[in-house]
Length: 254
Image (cartoon, rainbow, N blue to C red):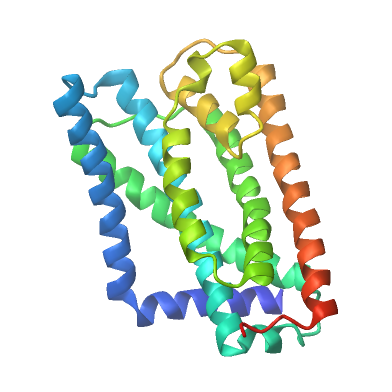
């Protein structure tokens, strides 16, 4: 708990110290949504009603992933470069717990930012969405899935050190994936999409906000499966990367 509090306060003071930079990143995400929204209005004659609900849900959850991944990746890369990561490995807690604390702190910050982005995009589009209570379940499962993604990103940083370009490519490819309405596809495509992180949760939330009938048992089971799958993948890959850097003495950046 002490290490988690320290990580949380570190995040708070970083935001306080570099507030202008974080505000700029926030407005960049808002501008991206405006470009998607107005671009769709110009090309498709308007993004209204149910399609706009789907756009908002997909974009807000992508912003949650983007913030979690970018913050986790950049933090670990900077710590490895400055030597702080080696010092953190000397702490009296396991490396798994160390990065769990970092991931949870990032998720809390990203969650607050996602809520602010949600309010901002609804205000910009002048389209206020009524969220049913059931959406709490897929949203919590989505947050848990990002823990597994956090471990995966840390593993890549530990192994390859410089992955900034890879993160950027992944983030914007995945934005397109999350904006695809897999819930309208065939059963096979729908099932295959459940292998992608957070995709079943996004489909579930889009169906819920649009008040469309859906198979609750299917989306609940697939969302739980997706969460467990990516938590396992993240932990397994992290354990392999963690053992590799310790065995080969390549924890530092150079």
